[in-house]
Image: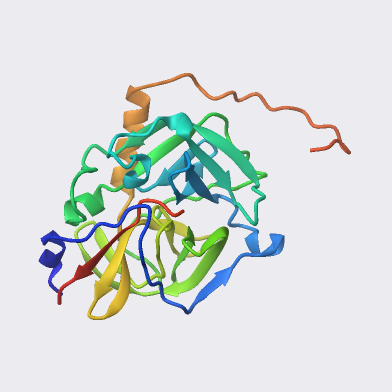
Length: 271
């Protein structure tokens, strides 16, 4: 495998265009029972300029791809222009929150190409205006360590499947180079930022995020990055640049009371 091929000129398609996804292995999470346990994965709506996929890693922190938080002019979006809709399914979300603060990794160059350096730094955190309680959506933990387990999966939104999450229960790790992983998960526009899960022991943990997709020897593949160090750096960035804290007051509820796809990058990789 020639990973240096990623360093060559590539085509970057943002917010529109043609993309062919693998047609097998995806299951739409249509019913509420299907969604159970996956509510923390949601759709990030980008002020009418498309969408990405994001995942709660804490009640008020959403993890996504860095290129999702930049606009078409490659400028950082205002946090309030981003809305996270947890577990969105056919117009109904488990919870909906606006962004309060964004930390995009400084190693990511929004004007650069999809190369190894940009993939490994294509990570951002969005702090929400209010936490999503664990009873609504239970945040996911990050995977750490070298043992990935035999079951790698992806849960995402995407072009042509924007109204509900789709889950691919089995992907294969095709290769890795440093902090960059290549997997054969089904991705398309809007899948950027989607969590790639490793099933080791109990509940799945987030192994990587979808940064972009492309072709390797005629097979559709996705590229992602290892996360623990990047996320630790982003959390430190949020602490260094505090903004007004979300309202943590819990409202008491009486029983019986009422209650286009964005930013994905696609390349062709040489042998």
